[in-house]
Length: 142
Image 1 (tube, rainbow, N blue to C red):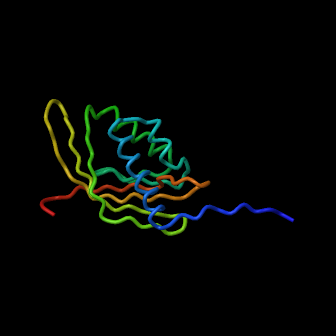
Image 2: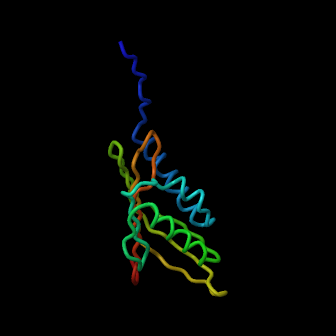
Image 3: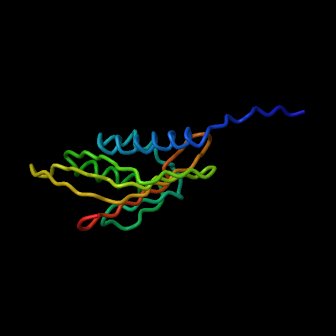
């Protein structure tokens, strides 16, 4: 007879809290320009996608990883604050829809911008990983 251990049950509130914590870790890794932390958050598979504002679609971890390396190398300073619009969890898939409030210092000038973003997470081996990030600039007033 096979003994199966029960899978811990999380309430919807606990699941949302987990997703929001991983989402927050993504933005802190971005701000710190920490490629190791970013690598821990993203799934390493070929099925990941990323769309940075103004970029083509990046597919697979190798392209996504290289994009973050390039962004980190060319970004002297960045702060990102987020306004979460919605968080949804469906079994092993979750997403966060939010507004990114971005402040950068480039060549001594402070620049501010907003993007609408969607981050999709997948539950793999008991841990939530980012599998899709899409950010588009907000043009004009919301």
